[in-house]
Amino acid sequence: MTIDFERIPKMTVAVGCAGALGAYLRWGGPEATGVLLGSCLSVFNFLWYKSITSAMSQRRSPYTPLLAARYLVAGVAVYVIFRLTGIPPAAVMAGLLANVAAIFLDILYQAIFKRQT
Image (cartoon, rainbow, N blue to C red):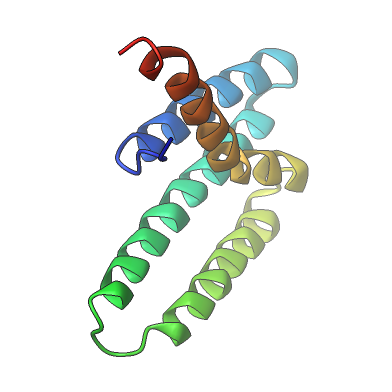
C-alpha cells in the first residue's frame, strides 16, 4: 500500500472545507475562517515539502535551508493570522491538522477500494 501524493492535496482541501463548515455551524464565522486558513497552510506546506523532496532526490543543489524555511514561513503566517485578524488559534491549529486527516482517509480509501481490484 502506497500513499497517493496526487490525491492527498485534494483530500486535504475536502477535509478543510468540511471542517470549516462544521466549525461554522457549531461556533460561527471566525472559527470557520481559522480552520479554512489552517487547512490552506496545510496544503501549501504539503506541496512545498513534496516539491523540495522531489528536487532533493534529483540531486540538484542542497535544499536543507528551504526545509527549515517552510516552518519559518508557516510560523510567520500563523502569527500574522493571530495578531491581525483575531481568529482563534485553536481553529487554525485544527485546520493545520487537515493534512493528517487526509492521509488517514487515503489509507482507508486504499484499504477499502484497492483490495477489491
